[in-house]
Each structure stands twice: as structure tokens, then as C-alpha cells.
Amino acid sequence: MVNQEQNPPQQEQPFVAAKQVGFNLEDIILNPNNKVALLYPEHNNKDHFKCVFDFIYKCCLRKPFTKSSNMYKEYLTEFWYSAKALENSKVYFSTPTGGIYGEIGVNTFRNAIGTHYLPHSSEYVAPPSIDIVRLWFETIRYGEGVTTKGTLKKSLLPPRWRLLMAQVIQCLGGKTVGFDQITNKEAIILYSLANRININYANIFWEDIIIKLNKKHREKVVRYTRFLSLLMMHKMKEGYGDGELTIYPSQVFSVNK
Image (cartoon, rainbow, N blue to C red; front, top):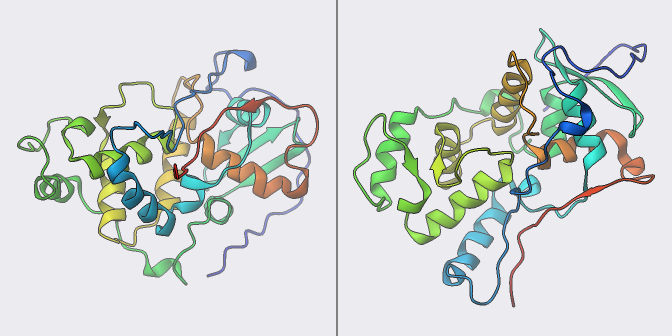
């Protein structure tokens, strides 16, 4: 697969807020609920953890779901403050602290998060419809009847599925509503991972980032902190983490021996 994006040289632009930003840089919120797993011997799901742990370490999202990398407040807040979605599905951003700026697209994002798991983009399939996913929830012993419009809840899943769903929800990060509620996007990701459906995860996440950047009034909560940190690391290479930076706390998957 050809994943190299050819961009012409660009003149650096001043660090300014995107037009959708109605707050100061210091007002940006980094939600601490971004952990992949925080487990201890008395954890209620300890009997199911090893199974889920092994599954995630073999899935195509293992890099953003498991990589124990430092995430830095300055990089994330500067990206969220300055990022502008462009008409060609690219994003322009500027991070003065990291010394990088310019346009990036989905190919760079895919390489950064490690989801180029098929030889060619034509081999990916369309995401399943939420109707198909809802029917599947009934086959995995979901705790009540699944309606076409009702809210799916993590608490109604059996233990192993509940634990896996929790990792999907928290690894995407930035959620501002209750962690029991499962969005359609999260349900589709769970279904596709569990059934080895070769959807283009990078496209799904990138399109969602662009939607959030394009909102008339940008939210103060940074989304996809793990994914954006991997993107910053990919762009900065050896310079990632240089200087006096504020570490954004993060938990990752670990097995309690």
C-alpha cells in the first residue's frame, strides 16, 4: 500500500485559534478517563482479563490500545486549539512547543496509529450497519431485548464483552457522558473487531476527528488523545518529548502476575 503523502513546502503560519474555538488555550480539557486497563488482584473481572488482554494484543488496533507512550499536555492542547479541517479531508495544525506545523491526512494518521493491516486500501470493506450490529448483540447474551433505537449499555453485556467494550470506550477517550452508554460507532468497532471484519479503522477515526473539528463551536474536551499523541510522535520522531513538558497521565494494559 502506498501511504506516502506528497505535500508541497509550506510557509509557517502564526499560531492562532481555529475559527470554531471560543475559549483560551488554557481552558482545554484533557479527560483523565483514557485508560486501557487499571487492574489489581481483587478486580471483579480478573477471570476474564487474560482472554481480553490476549485478544487486544493480537488485534489491528493493538498499537493505540496498548502502547505505553507518554502523552503531553502541550502537544494535545496546541493541536486541538489550532487544528483546521480542510476541504481535501486533511487537517492543518500548528504545535509551537513541538516545532511542527502543516497539513496531514488519513495516510499519515494510519501509519502513525499502526492500522495499515491490509496490503491495499481496496481490500477494506464498508462498516456494517448498526442494525446488523444490534442483532448481533442479542447473540452474545446481552442483558435485555435490543430495540432498533434504544441506547445500548455496557453494563448489560456479559463480563468478557463488557471488559472489551470498556477498553474500546476508554481508549477512544474524551467521552463527556456516562461510560455505560455505548455509541453506534463504539458498537460497530466492537462488532468488527470481534468478527474480524476488515473495516478501515483509520478512516473512521479520522472522519470523526474532522467532524469534531468542524463543529460550529468546538468542544473544550480533546478527543482521541492516544491517537493524536501517536500522530505527534510520528511527526516529531526523536524530538518527541524534548523540553519541559507536562505529562498527561495514562494507563495501559498490563497483566497482574
